[in-house]
Image 1 (cartoon, one colour):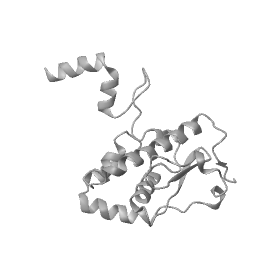
Image 2 (cartoon, rainbow, N blue to C red):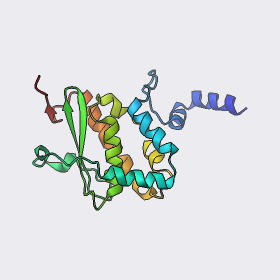
Image 3 (cartoon, one colour):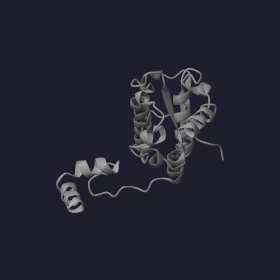
Image 4 (cartoon, rainbow, N blue to C red):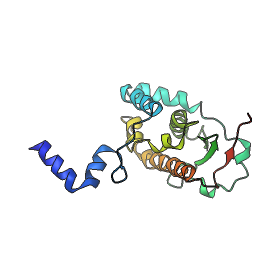
Length: 184
């Protein structure tokens, strides 16, 4: 009865079925495959215990790239993630079709945020915007599972949502995204 009920329920309530899968495809479009870089990050964090995750976060916090000077003069209003307890500004840059993200965050004050961003950026930077858009809805909860940092999840999910918004803008050809073209 369980499987038959789920199938009937999914047909009658597609939004519920989509929520269970963690992906919200457009009507009539199949879910895109999860990019390899994101699969690797999720598999690595699913396999780790609490102590290993904590050590990985400390290590990754040190790897967050500093914010390039070219972003210092931009109006930060559209780059700030207000849902975060810590001040976080996320800057996208389109380079030769690849999206690159930078963050302005106090690494010493918020090493968990810095680590999460460094890990996420390692999976999506330099990739087409579609890779960022393919980050699954359970990305934050998978990475942070068992760490006792549930109070941070709202802000972390808001950061992922902001990254996805920037990726959609890049796909839509938004002139507001900083663009750099490498010399040939």
